[in-house]
Length: 162
Image (cartoon, rainbow, N blue to C red; front, top):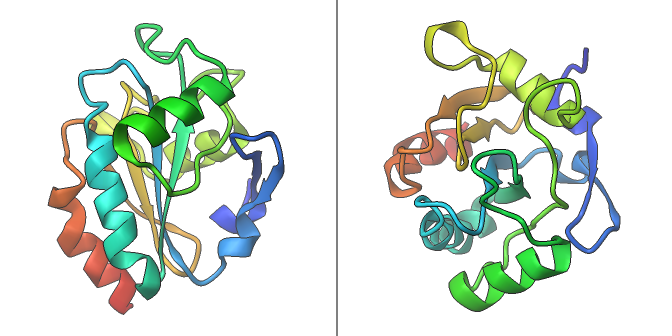
C-alpha cells in the first residue's frame, strides 16, 4: 500500500495525467463531488476555501463520481462546464472516478483505509465526503458530506500552520 498521497496519479478532468506528487508540501482537501446532489452548493464553499488559502498552500481537489444516486451523469466536459458556470470552480477537478468497491480509484482505496468513517467503515457513504491531507502527504481527517467547507476552516488553518 502507498505511503502517502504523493504516490498516486489521476486523470485531470480534461484527460491529462495528474501526478499528486506535484503537490508535495501542500495541504490537500480531496472531495468526491456530484453535479446534481443536495450538497452540490458546497462547490461555492470549496471554491472560497481554495481562493482564500491557496497562497498559503491549500489545494482543493474534486473527484466527480456518479456512484450515489446517479447524481453526476455527465461526461467530464459537461461536469467541468457545470462547475465553472454555476459555481466558478477554478480549483483542480479530476476525471470521474469510482470511490468504492473493486473498481474504486486507488487513491480512494487508500484514503478510505487511512481514515475510516463511522464505526470503522471504509466505504464512502455519499457525495461530498472530504479528506484533509497534511503537508506530509498523510490523511489528517475525514469529513462527512454534511460537514460544510466553512466548518473545516480551523482544521485547514492548523494543517497549513504545521
